[in-house]
Image (cartoon, rainbow, N blue to C red):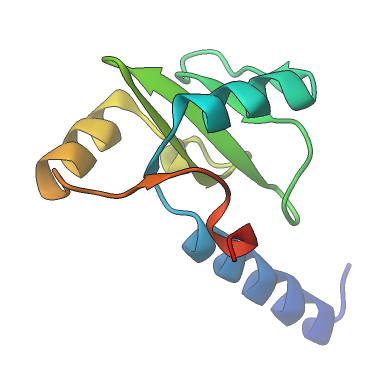
Length: 110
């Protein structure tokens, strides 16, 4: 069992990571680079693929191609309710019709 200080640090790191890359539109090139960089992980019933290497703890990037557009974001691999779903993408598109298209991870952009 982890001490309270370590638990708090991990919880803060996870929350920060999830907030840094929410469901976003991404370029096809970004999507394809992530598909080719490491073996992708797939989950039954989840659209797209996951990056096998965690950003932190169990936070992984998920990428989805849907209706000719590409999406990405950090999710908690152990919590399917955080996955990028087609319903979440539809709601995102309705709420953000002019959303910027990311060419790379938000925290890595200059």
